[in-house]
Every structure is written in C-alpha cells, then in structure tokens.
Amino acid sequence: MIRDILLTRAPAAEVLLEAQSQSTVENAHFTAALLAKLGVRRVMIATCGWHLPRAITNFRRCGLDAVGPPPAWIESPRPSLGRRVREQVSAWLDARQLARMRELE
Image 1 (spheres, rainbow, N blue to C red):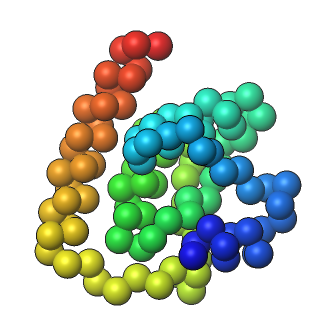
Image 2 (cartoon, rainbow, N blue to C red):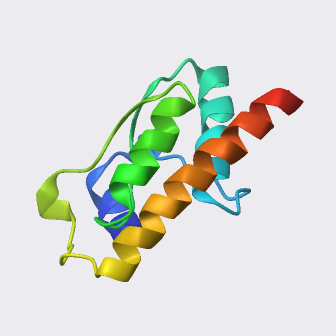
C-alpha cells in the first residue's frame, strides 16, 4: 500500500524500486550502490509503520540520509509484542549481515 501511495504522490522520475534484495539490509545495501551512481543521498523509505525504524537504520548505516514518509501516509496499528521482539532481533542480525557484506567488498 505504501508503494502505491508513493507512486501516486511522488514524481515517477524520483521513485526507485530495487528488486534484487531478499532482506531489508540487502535492500539498503543495493539501493545505496544504485543511488551512489546517481549522486543521490537523501531517500524516503516506503514500508509499513512497524518496520520503518529498522529500515531507516539500515539505510543510514549504508550511508544514505533516510527518512520515512509523512505519518498520514502510514496505516500503523501498534505492533504486537512478538513483532516488536522480532524487529529487535532482526535489527541485530541486520547489523551483523551488513558488517559481513562490507568485509566482502
């Protein structure tokens, strides 16, 4: 849904959809590489509200100035305890994966 809203509210030339990744940290890494070629550093992340903090953190760790969309664009009920715990564990795993990816560069 966020993708659809973004595509209707942002100029098409300013929307980049990265389709190679299989995880949030890969999405951040691959997007940063694509945008570096274009000289772009500031990005708006389109994802659900409960996932947004981790996504922004990953994009920032990859060197981008990442922000979320305006709150009115996001439908985000309070996530369950299980989802919040999963996001915390995933954030820790993302940091480890990103460190390994950087070692391989």
